[in-house]
Image (tube, rainbow, N blue to C red; front, side, top):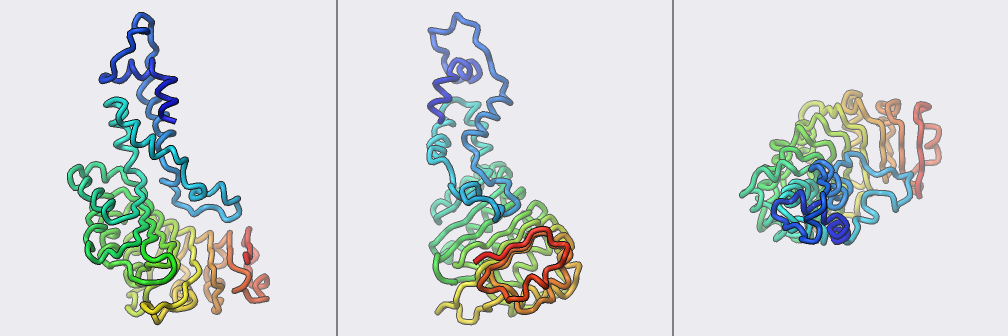
Length: 330
């Protein structure tokens, strides 16, 4: 992509980039000059990753190929990201602001390099809007890296955690990570997601974070590490519109006492109608045995999704008449 743009538009960007020498063959012609705003738009289209502002989950009713994660990206985008900053100083300045917007972190060395970069240039951290963590290695040897990173990302909107094993529940998300999110990113956070089986927060740590995130609109969980430490008072999530509770994994040798349903969490939310005043979309992969949650919050829900195998036969009779869309998936 970048090679095509450079070849087709060389007369234009040669006139706008001070560090680029003009081609002698065209110096006698009057060259048009594109405004910087237009170049910014072109560069945004080429190197920005999809999903950096997706504070809502993908629509389950859309075909898979239209969602933000399938396909992930044009494979050429990583080449474009590496080569566009080499064209000229103005392009490098623009890309330096775009690339940090959406970070996908897959290893500890990559995480450490980003942290060191932000320590040297703190203003880059202010560009970050979304971070997806998918680190399979244990972070026990470097527990401070993620909190150090979050210290710089005060404008973070989306936090996605897919750390740990692909198959078994293994570990708790460190309390220090959720404390750092609450301390440095709480006012900007709009989406929190633990969409992987390897790692999960405790209910106490998660509730404390949500308490400090008044603009949170989407919460997605696969399991809760523990409910042992009680949450004091009523947790109100005034802006939460989407609650997604996934398929809880089977207990492992590491995590022996794992709740097999979402009833403890839903029982807490059902204790007060003000806990979820803005709820509109509710998805749950294990249908609850206690229906109090629906009696308290059902009138607010407009979209509901669950699984066929976990659903009781009387489900349609329990659906509030105000629900606009509901579906049962196998």
